Image (cartoon, rainbow, N blue to C red; front, side, top):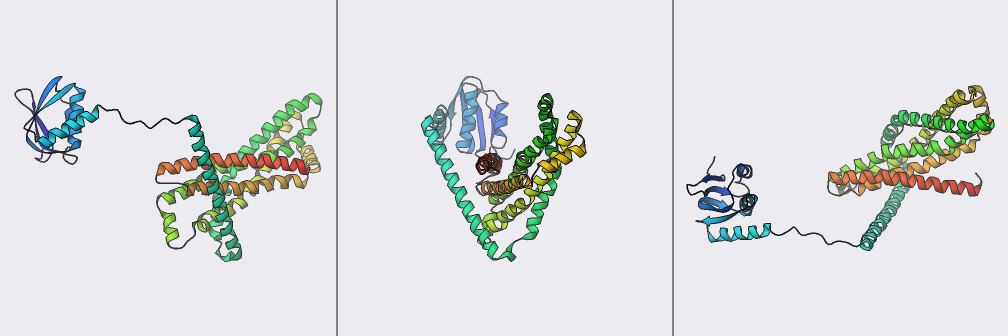
Length: 366
């Protein structure tokens, strides 16, 4: 072992001789070496004649070793300053760690309300900034990064077709199956067409598409922007006079506003197809009969209602995902937290918006 490294050897009187530098840089593997030695209970002589240097880290290692065996140190040939340090560290080990003061339920509620209010104001400020940036792009349409937009359309739209199609098909099967079980008792089998049509076109297709996209694309937006914030890429953009909202947010909003209505139409088709298959199996309603009644009963406004709702859902998901990404602070752990919050908030706001649409359409008799 090098002379500068900490070392320890037994003495004839049962004590221990310390040598080398018992410092942060000189301890090396000494904590593990001490774990392999037993000093016994009682008073243990520690000879510091060959001791080179020692700091609080070395003292703490010694004190931890002594306390584990219920022993006390008798220092021999130690400088007075080091003896004082040993005493101070030994006293500190007996003190419990300070605990944060307990907060009352009312204080916790107040802090939660304050944090929620600040986040809401931040979201409104972010929406205003995005609106101003969008207005600037409308006045100068040549600044729109169409290549980025179409790339996001491919990732958020085309790549999501399999999961959207499968989910909506199974949802159409479930709706038709549950409806068939009840309509069969009243001899109203044919009304399963109306049930599947209205349920899928107005509610389930836009809602299930939005929820899947919120978990798939909204989380990706938050993670991507959050990582760029942590690696200071966003700060670098601002330094060279590039607006991060124009570069990172608006192409995502525009791409999702294009992709989600198209995904909703695709979900309408696959959902109705699933209902058609189940109606044929459970109620003996043939495909031509199903399609004929579907064409007579379903109006164009029913499809437009679902597509219009999906457009609003797309803007909500994209803005929430980007907003939470920009709120990332400091570490990769923060990226995970903000990504989770983006998914939860997006799905919650999508459901709230859907409920508001239902109330508004009921009042407007749509």
